[in-house]
Image 1 (tube, rainbow, N blue to C red):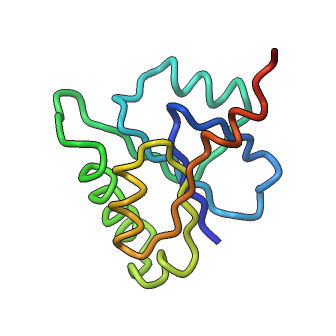
Image 2: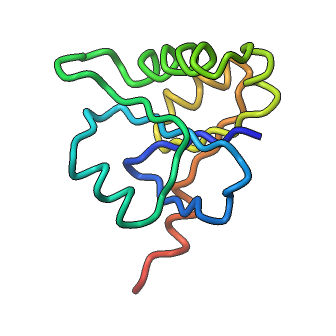
Length: 118
């Protein structure tokens, strides 16, 4: 199985998934503070993809390109990605785009709402 997570708007704790591959795809320009957050919270990953500084590509197109890059990096076919990947992203246009590729995409915001402390 392959799990792909967005960062902003998506809360994850991947420590219990140590036997699966974890990929982070974020439309933000990732910096030292982001890596520190991931490390401090023991959010491990096998691959991480982020926006290059100065890149204004819309999020859905950016993440579609990231999926193709990830497939090449992992030496897997898009068919394998379709069969094994589960994407969690709060951006509707990203979910629609990647669902169009045949990737299962889930909106984590409803799960996040149930965990808010009142």
